[in-house]
Length: 117
Image (cartoon, rainbow, N blue to C red; front, side, top):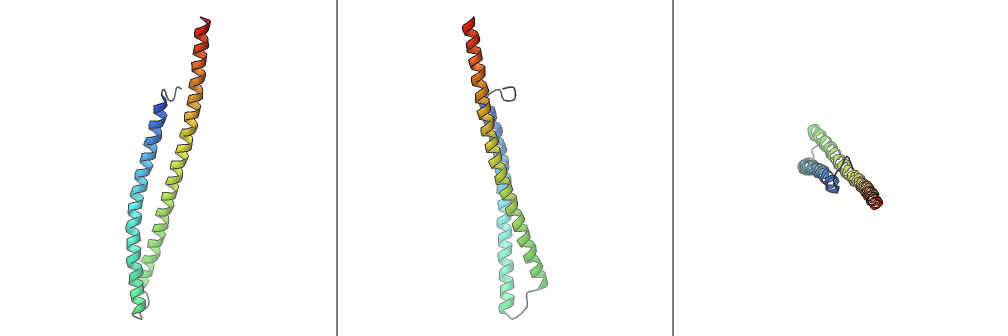
């Protein structure tokens, strides 16, 4: 009860943390979309080279691998942030349950004290 004077405080903190993570996820998704476009262009370039009977240029191979690696990293970041969001939700649910339990206990003690007077 000392940490959160009101139940809404718990919800506010939870929502703020979730929104911050969601903002980070959206930014990462934007980067991921851009990288996916780059990958498609590189794959098309490699395909065109092969159709023309040429080997795929070393530079193209290098860029393909780098782009695939970056995509994997961004996907991992998003998954990590989603897991963080879920942990925040669980923790907030636990804090809310504990807050409500303490509040009921404090209210019951106060009522018992008033009855004795």
